Length: 236
Image (tube, rainbow, N blue to C red; front, side, top):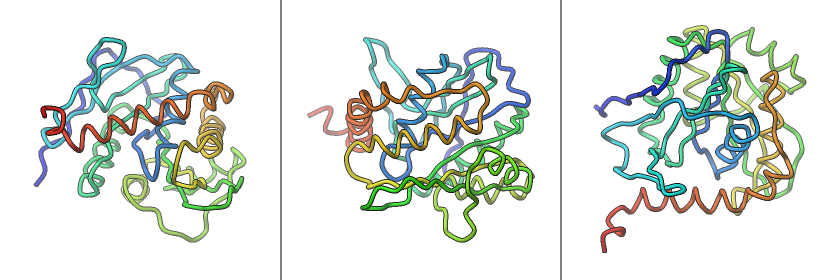
């Protein structure tokens, strides 16, 4: 049994009827980059951290300040929360993370959880698909102009969010986007960012800034992930 995953809030939150974005990395870092873009464009503020005894003991120093590698950002006006992680979680943790996310969403009376997963493709493709955990979630993604995935397999945290969400009747939408899976993928990050904002009224993406920052952000994330994996190298 793995140690519990803990969520520590640092400010009061009112997210009833709002949204939760899953910003844990899947294949590549497009999910994280898209989430970061929304956070910076739509004026989110740090609202909490996610931690566990099983997570690597590491502090990410940004602008001279210590940061947990997995954090919660919130836009109070839009009632949107985002779980943003610079840790590549072990597959064995995916189920527990998804369940904790669903538990927190239920406690905050979140109306919709939005997650994403990359489909590896060597040829750039514009088409975006999505799948919902409930009939209501499926209606929401159709109303947003997204195509429904009829057949396929969704792994990891997004897959667990769908399965558990269908049992608990929590609306979950997973967006599927194409990615080369190598190098900073501006196209897929921008596509995903726009798809997320189609589902959240008032949220926005600064695409030019995203394209300008994607490579820098990905380098930072990769560095964070590698340092978390190889902590012993930090002390040599």
